[in-house]
Amino acid sequence: MALSDLDDKTLVSMVLKGRSSAFEDLLKKYHDRVYRLAFRLLGNTQDAEDVIQDVFTQVYLSLKSFKGNSSFYTWLFRITYNVSITHRRKRKNVISLQTGQGTDSAPEIALASDGSAPDLNLDREENKALVEKALGMLSIEHRACLIFKEVEGLSYEEIADSLEIPVGTVRSRLFRARLELRDILQKLGGTETK
Amino acid sequence: MLSENEKLLIAGLVDEQLSPAERINAERLIKCSPEAVRLLELLRKDSKEVQLLKTFKVPAGLSNRVLVKCRQNVRGLRLSSSADSSWYQYAALMAAASVLFIAGGISYLCIQLFVNVGDPTNSGLANNENKEKSLEKAKPIFAKTSDTNLIQDKALNEKNMASAKPDLLKNEPDRSQIQSNEKARQKDGLLAAPSHEIISLTKVETPFPMLVRAEDLANAAESKFWSKTLKNEKSIRLEMVTKEPVRFLNQLKMQLGKNGFLSFSDVGTLVNLKNKSEKSSLGHLVYFEINNPEELSSLLGRNLPVTKEKEKASKAAPKNGNAVALDWIVISAATPNDSKLLKSVVGVDLLDQKNESRPSGFDSKSKSVKNALVLTYSQGQSLATSSEVKQFIEARKLAVPGKLRVLLVLRAES
Image (cartoon, rainbow over all chains, first blue to last red; front, top):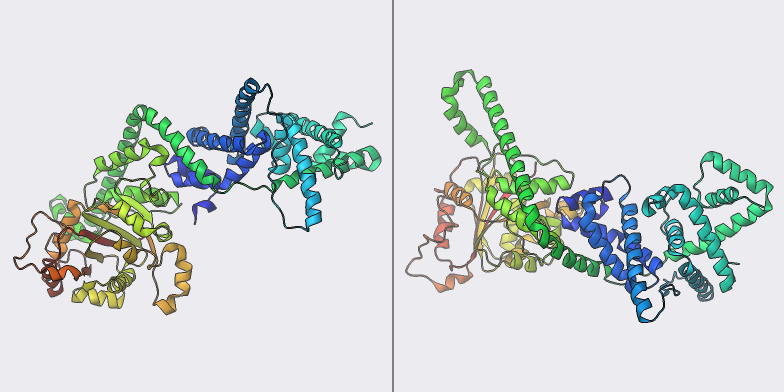
């Protein structure tokens, strides 16, 4: 059986026993999701890459504290969220000192073609870009909730676990995030989303 | 106008996160409220739009960059804290060693008791010495050294496989070496891979002994691996673990032939190899000398079927003459125990370089001679009198000094 076929808890226990290739497997398994999450939260690739490095370093160092009560990826996403928040705060301070501006600008767009017809693809891409931009304009708490739910496919409980908030708060926050997103999309004039 | 709770209910329906009771309420609401229907449609539409963001390009080589960065970060942090934790690691290793020692002792006593009870003619403490001798004969000649045991057990446990312990440990464990190796690994954190992971982290020079999965070895750049691993070694022991050692030995012998080695085997070995008798009491060894470690890659590398390709191997069995897969290779420096072993089996310590005498008429043409000793034998059997073994030893005297001496031990995976 290949290491990559093992479940997360087994891989974690192997890392704790000193088998670092298991850590490599965890990293390979989740790096794209962590990167995607960081990118969505921070809005640019450079910050996302900085964050993912910090996240996995932190994961390795604090793996002992992972008790296995929750799933590994919710724990990982929690770290990603916290590191992203910290990174954003630091970055905001630096940028506001340098230019007097924050980081809440529209994010870079990194979309993958899905092989559809060109015109349909264009519409879809435009729409994606619009949603991406709208998402970037949400508050980071709302953004995180929406991304966790819609992009990462987490349940309310898992989101609650990742963000360390009650399930009820997840519900209301998610709803508000959706309303906020709807408002922004309408303001941005997205045809499909109206 | 929908209330806040009703809106949350509709949102929950979109997310499919409602309890059965809530779901009934939400569906009832949709049936009677057009506003609820409109909200549901909008939320579903937005949800789909956001879900499209799943398609996302991750930069090429990101995972490697992250791994490198992690190693840099972790190394610095680990080195600064290693001094505080070293006593803990030492204590843990000592505890593990003690448990193993006690367990071994208990097993030994149990076996002794069993032998005493089962044989009425030899009961009593007075005959213990005879019992020990008979037990000594009964244990496998190539019983794993305990340092190898530790590492292999660790690896096998990690694979959720039950590791079979040898009945008795033949040699005293070299605990200090294991401890220092373990400490060295842990000190370097991520940079120091555990022994069996040298393949995935080839930049790391891991102290012996190391256990390598054959499938990793087959996928790696073998020659680079061997040259890196054995660059300062003069004599090594390779313990190869397979399910069918005799059949594997056959394959290995053929492999040696393909690589220009002339194999020397006594008659008994040839009979065993021909019959392919997988008796647990049989010991198997191959001894050869090579000019550089890279040669091992062609001998032990991709040309031999490994576990990962076990299925393929078994499918190809009729054509390849029942190819046997190799599971693990334990690489270690040759120890005095290996010297003892060689001395007991072939009568000469082939690993000993100090007392080596070269004949005066040393022939430089013999550089091209590549000989290998391939033996399978019963417990306690000495093959020193075998003419083939004598021939090998004689031929070896003409060999060029400074070669890498390889003692290859085949062991059955229980």
